[in-house]
Length: 168
Image (tube, rainbow, N blue to C red; front, side, top):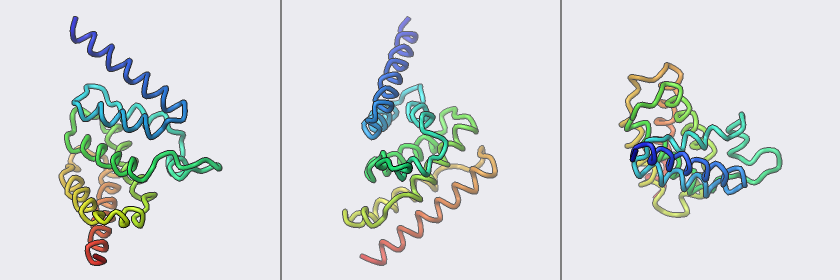
């Protein structure tokens, strides 16, 4: 019926964004996944893309092995917000999925170039908004490691927001 065709359509979308990712259109794939996710999808598009990334997320994000960093600062920032929003909403995510998303947020944040952001002037606001979203994520259902990691990222984002506010 209608539900089956909606699921088929979502799976077809997954295949499309995974193909874009494999073809080297990484930012484009993540942007599409985030848009689909924002439309209240029943599939974890972002999670499916994150699963395609090689083992060393940090190396991959920094463009290790002589590669160019795959995601622009803007896409990294959008991705942090999208992942945080997914965690905030909870929506039937497994503990493993939550842990993975927290790891991604942490890695994205730690490879994030605040100087590039501060050139846009609104960096203190952005950090403030991100801090608010992270504050709303409950740590109740998280494993100890995930909860610790989340607390560390929250602290780092709050410090950045303070530094940027003081600078302006």
